[in-house]
Image (tube, rainbow, N blue to C red; front, top):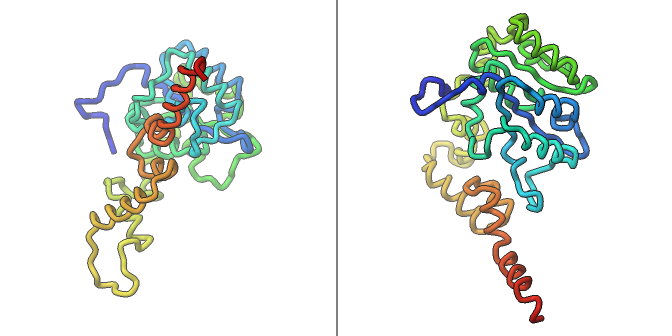
Length: 264
């Protein structure tokens, strides 16, 4: 899970402070992306930092993407973030690398990012946004986070960090991570399959299965009824590629009609 010592990994000072906003929906606009004041504050940062948006926020606005539920307000704020020189391109897909190198993370409480950061146990400062009325007192992760509800609180946290006065809450976070998740070893899918008994024949518990054959069988079933949602589930194509696969012929016909409209 660690990438810090790989020779292929390069880091610069902009990676010390990482902003990783998540997104919500029209019905539940609770994300950092829904807070205009905080978005404007981040765009106006004068110190080195990097902004890593969720990959799905890079979709074409006109693309029919069933996996995305960005609200109109969040889309406006995504566009605002794109005016920043600190935004990372969509080709930067390794969020884990950014999390590991960061000294300060600014993200949503309701996100996987802050929990993943607890693995590294290297005195990070994790600043999480949440609405005050959505605070969950039973969330035992909170003891490792600095929570902010508005732009004023975020500003004070950053001022304390730069002054060397911000308490580090992640000193024992690695042990907490292991208690919840165990040590990542690349075999998480196999463990999940074991827990859910995907590889077990209920009629004959001693029967052996070829895991690769089962995986290929599932993939073949998906591909036998190829739909846009199936392509998203398979995860083998980008959003743009899926659009071409699903709508390429229609787009070609439409463009042909436009080119020959004078003759119709």
